[in-house]
Structure formats: structure tokens, C-alpha cells
Amino acid sequence: MPPPFTLLIDPLPADAAPADFSSTFTEVDASAPALRVGELSTQRGDGIFETLGVVDGHAQEVGPHLARLKHSAEICELPIPNLAQWGAAISFAIENLPKSGEFSIKLVLSRGVEAGPAPTAWLHATVAPSYGHVREAGVRVVTLDRGYARGTAEHAPWLLLGAKTLSYAVNMAALREATRRGADDTIFVTSDGYVMEGPTSSVIIRHGDAFATPAPSGAILHGTTQQSLFEHLRGEGHVADYRDISVAELRAVDAAWLVSSVRLAVAVTELDSRAMKTDASTTAAFNRFLMLPRG
Amino acid sequence: MPPPFTLLIDPLPADAAPADFSSTFTEVDASAPALRVGELSTQRGDGIFETLGVVDGHAQEVGPHLARLKHSAEICELPIPNLAQWGAAISFAIENLPKSGEFSIKLVLSRGVEAGPAPTAWLHATVAPSYGHVREAGVRVVTLDRGYARGTAEHAPWLLLGAKTLSYAVNMAALREATRRGADDTIFVTSDGYVMEGPTSSVIIRHGDAFATPAPSGAILHGTTQQSLFEHLRGEGHVADYRDISVAELRAVDAAWLVSSVRLAVAVTELDSRAMKTDASTTAAFNRFLMLPRG
Image 1: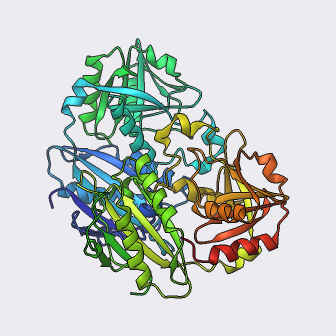
Image 2: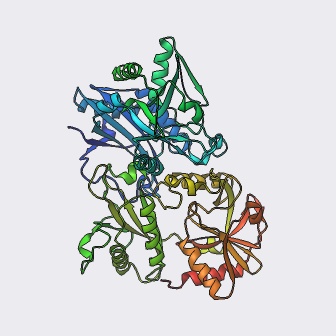
């Protein structure tokens, strides 16, 4: 089946271990209706997701994505996903995707139909947008206040700040605001002036030979691509730290990137209409690394 | 068709005025799939909604609900809805609902399928839960920090705080937190200690003969039920004000209610585990008024 294609998944309890998961998958035509209007994913944005990159027949960072799916489920008090089942669904999708080119696989776990007995789950595979140009040219970015002070997530877990939920209307509105300001993307900042993350990406900065990303807290998603890059950078002998980064510091770095699973690494070329220093060779090295098969 | 039932609506431009809208409605079985997985309502919580109460064959406050749907569309930069078409869909639903009993009609306008040409829209009619008991017994409430300081909405419109979006995962998490604390419902407060609203209701307080609700700002939905009650109270010669209400003030009121379109008015009997003064005769009078047909 050529992409786009969709697998509905009948979610098993976390510890179920059948010999073969394939009987729990149902292929559906991506252009045909598959969900009921009573779905809490659509009524309330009440569910979680992950988006994996696929490069030349290899799904990237499957383990970290599944670990984060489980973490999001815990925060949202959804039934803990059966990670072996999700892994089998990814493998099933990979077998059906072309062996060359870039694709994206989205995993969705919804709370299910209102008052229904069970969550709803599916996998949706698509051809990735063509990001070759933006990986070279970079993006113009505006900072936007996310409205929360540092530390909010820790004392207000019901804000679900560390979970990758389907309630992404604000993230999409922030990208429209960026466009309105003549930019391509956004970096959310706390109301007290600290860097958080992009609506669909993590932020990495470089000062000289040292790299950093905002300290993971309840308010920031732990980026799978960022973690993979940091492991690589440390393996090459670089410093790669988690720490608070103020907006003032961000304006003065030697280079900054937004990194994410499908678009990979893109340089921040402008911040709030002011040119930023960029580092084309590191950007290219990041993307060469991110195109390699990673576990 | 008995409830639940669903009408898919083919959204017309705001100013289209056909002689008959019924050809733009398609009845679908509420238990059958009707939405594609590419729906942005489900992928991103990217859409808006309204929930109307229906009492004995009369849809309540149609005008204010449709006005708020349009306001939400403006904030979210969705195509402006054709209110005559939505009104016709409500009338069509009313014709198909039983002439006695309480029902709820949900209107949803989604940004549509990703990269698709048009928004998706539907109406979903259901039997209302049985709220007779809670209208008499009231609810135990906990206050929960919404994480935003007063004034946040005004300088950060991309947070969509005045829009009734489908991104309600936080509202649902707040209700779970209330349950965990042995309560029934929640009142969100600002990080600087001011009353906002419930996850699915407005807050009204009474001091002696004077009623008040938090000043409508970009951060609070303008409640259709609250507005209807305020008009009624003023017509009866009461003071009914919009103003800032601190949490400290809320703890000391003569009575407080959560009001919403389907559950109607319920007394706050406990706030953060402390008993609140209640006023059973006003609660009953509120609900008698709210059960009457209103435009």
C-alpha cells in the first residue's frame, strides 16, 4: 500500500504478549472516514501522539518515541500503551513503505469515543514534505510568550505541559502568528523570559564549542531528535548541556537550531527580525548524522 | 432519527443565502465512522465548538451560541461560519428530536483535513445526562491554577484564550484532578489569584442582593448561560456586575454557582474542602428560568 496509509490499532493491555500482533491492525483507506464524531480526540483534543521520521526504509528513534508515548500516557492518565504492539505496528508500516525516500509515521492514542469502553489508536504514514531547501536555508523565527512562568508545570501538572497531547491549537496559532510577522517559525518563551521550545521542535544553541538546550522540565517536551544529537555530540567530545537559557542569551549565541523528527535540523537565521549568526557546516553535519539510521 | 444523531455539514461561505440549506446536510449514523484520520480536529485539536441545551423541543440561546462560534472562528482564523446555515442545521436537528426531555446539540467547525481544501463541520445531538440531582445537591469544587497571570490573553492572542477550541485536554485533566481531590468540579484561577471560569462553565457569585461574574477578558469565555441569567437578574432589579473577583473574595461570598448550557445552574457547596454558604431558593429560581424557552 503506497502512502498515505492508515492502520487502525486495537490497543492491547500493556503486558499482553501475543505471538503475532498483526491481527490487531486493520488497514483503512486514508481518504475514507475511519473515526466517529464521538471521538474524544476530535471533541476534546484528548489524546496523545508521536511523529517519527522514516529515512530510506528505517524508522528513526523508535525506542525514544515509544518511551515518550508511554510518558505522555502516564501524564494524561490514559491506559499505558503496549509498546511491543506499537513497535510491531511501526514495523508493519515500514514493510509497506518504499525503501527509499523520507516519510513520516504518526502514532495517535485517543481516549476513545465518549463514554466508550476503550481508547482508539491508529498509525498514519505519509510522504514527508520536501525539507531539503529549509535544511540549507534555515528559518526566520519570532519568540512568542507561552504565558507560563518558569516552574508552572511543576506545581500545576493538570496543565499537561510535559505531554505531547492532541490539543495543539495554540501551537498552530503560534505558527500563524509567526507567518503574520514575516517569519517561518516560533520559539516559545516563558512569561519571565526563558527559552522553552518550538511548537513542533526543540531548541539547541552553540557558544564556541559548547552546545546547550533548555533544561528539561515538566514544561518542555524532551526532544527525541535533540537527545540523539546530544549523545552524538558528547560522543565526539563536545560539551552538550541542559540548562536555563534566557532570551537575552539566545540573541547572542554563535548559532541556534530548531530540531525535530521529520524536518531534522534547521538553522535560526533571524530572531525577532534581527540576523543571527549561523554555522552552515555544523548544520550540514547535524543533518548528515540525522539521516543515518538510528535506533 | 432518535438521538444520538449526526449531521455532516458542507460549510458554505459566510454570505451564501440559498433558499434551502438542507441539501448541505448529510445525516450519518453516529456509531459509524464519519471523519478521516487526517482531520485537524483530531490531529491538532484545531477547530472550535459550541454546546447548546435543548429543553422540550426548544434550542436555548441559539443567537448567542452562533455569535460566539463566529467570535471563536475569528480568533482562530477559521473561515467565518455561515450563521444562517448553522441555524438551519439546528432547526433541522430540533425537528428530529423528541418534543419533551433534555438534549444537547454540539456544533463543531474543524480546520478540515490536513492540506485539504475546506473546513469540516458537523452537528451532533445527544440525550442530555440526567442533571436533576446535581442541580439540587450542588457540586464540591477545587480551585486550580490555570498557569496564566491576569492580562496574559491581551498581550498573547495566539494562546486563543477567548476561543472555544477543541483543544480541551487541559480542561479534562483539571476535572480528573478535581475527582482525585474528592471534588466534582474545578474553578480555574489565574496565577495571581483571580477567579476565571470552570473547564465547562461560568462562575457567578452573590453578595447580599448583588451578583457578579469575572470581568470578561480575552482569557475567559463569555458564557451564554451566564449572560442570559444576568439579563434576567437585571430585569428583576438586581445588580449583576462584571468585575475582578479574587479567590479570597470567592471564599467569602453568600453563594456561588457554576452555570452552563446543559447542566444549567449548580451551587458550589464546598470550595477546596471548606463548606460554602448556599442559597437553595435562588438556585431553584435560576434553574426554573433556565428551563424556560430562551432565544
